Image 1 (tube, rainbow, N blue to C red):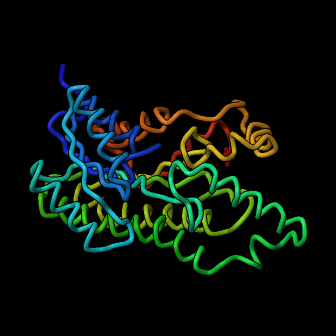
Image 2 (image 1 turned 45 degrees about the vertical axis):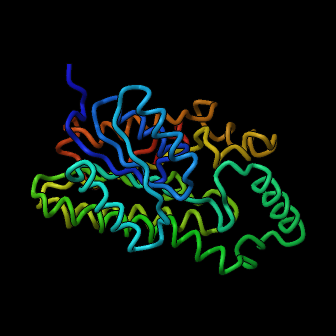
Length: 278
């Protein structure tokens, strides 16, 4: 039996780790050819090898999400390698300006520094926010999403056969959570960008939807899982009482990328265990 994405090509930014990798593997299992675009070559190649070992098709290309030419090169590579682009998932993202996927020690150190600063000044996360940190988070999370949509969207328009774009926002797009404003503001921007793009591209048969995950077990949230106070805070505000699994986000992305959601565009859906119910 054919998979739900048989004969489709998917570009997944941030596809080497976390939610991006989960989407890449899930989409490949459903028949899509995958272009894994990521800043980290080694995890990217590991993801490709895992997909190929399972019988799927995948290639890796290095991507700095904030570089317009690099995003255009990703789109061109998808056309050259697989013949086009049918699906885009924008999973490239960071939680802070110095975030590096998999470097939990760095994340714990940053959290400790923020906690100490907040003890001295409860408004430190906002009033003492480093502008370089702010700019990097906005550039990667919001501008990077725009550039990916522009590059892949241009290919989809030229193909004239429609397409599906799934952006990865966050529950922070609608709930500011705590700490520095950079991340929630960037994700709120992703949500508004998604709505704008959905209106613009719908007449051309291209659907654009957003996913707003809660706290999912990935490299990005590992620091919370290893810090008892934060873990208790998160679980205490999650009615389902647990962190989500990457495949639970990938399942939703698969639905939004497939023909099963053919009349859905401009939506933000939260796999968050009940965190946000507004």
